[in-house]
Image (cartoon, rainbow, N blue to C red; front, side, top):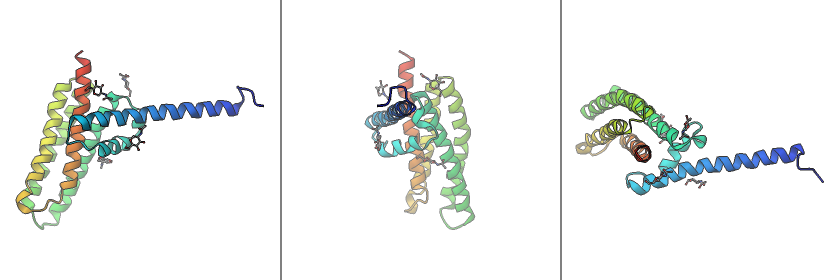
Length: 181
Ligand SMILES: *[C@@H]1O[C@H](CO)[C@@H](O)[C@H](O)[C@H]1NC(C)=O
Ligand SMILES: *[C@@H]1O[C@H](CO)[C@@H](O)[C@H](O)[C@H]1NC(C)=O
Ligand SMILES: *[C@@H]1O[C@H](CO)[C@@H](O)[C@H](O)[C@H]1NC(C)=O
Ligand SMILES: *[C@@H]1O[C@H](CO)[C@@H](O)[C@H](O)[C@H]1NC(C)=O
């Protein structure tokens, strides 16, 4: 029979510890997303879990870090969407006006998101909230620009930016509530 301090037992214990820690952290993402989707009908639970899980090292992150990660995800998605819009504009097909409006909206969103990150790090959650809200509005306004045209080439992307913003706002509301206690 092996003694308790055999290497195998040690590795098994470490493995168990890892599983417990990893599960606990996944639970924070799930919990955060459950909270968010309950409080905001715009947030799809599965999308929220998928989005936060896709961020590097998010399984080890606390709630403060998860909020920052959600803002980073918005930034990356806005940057990627601007690239797509530029490509669509080069095709010179249709919806040029709507596309140009979206490009302008999202170009303004990037410095706004950088400011939001600064506010967030300084725990100025009310200011960060205002800035992320304006990016959420940009996504809505962009999508509305295609309404009369019948079809939008950016629906999925706008929706993603909208939902990621909603997740960030929801996390900030929790943090703001706790910091003002
Ligand atoms: C978290 O949610 C995901 C997706 O719904 C699920 O696959 C996973 O098992 C959940 N994890 C925990 C620890 O509840
Ligand atoms: C869930 O929401 C409640 C109330 O809004 C808050 O006190 C709690 O910290 C939240 N939990 C998470 C994991 O966001
Ligand atoms: C956009 O956000 C999603 C989460 O919804 C994420 O998985 C994806 O990596 C982001 N896209 C970019 C280009 O960063
Ligand atoms: C959350 O994690 C960050 C590092 O990612 C750390 O600096 C911070 O102190 C943690 N906050 C809490 C409340 O534990």
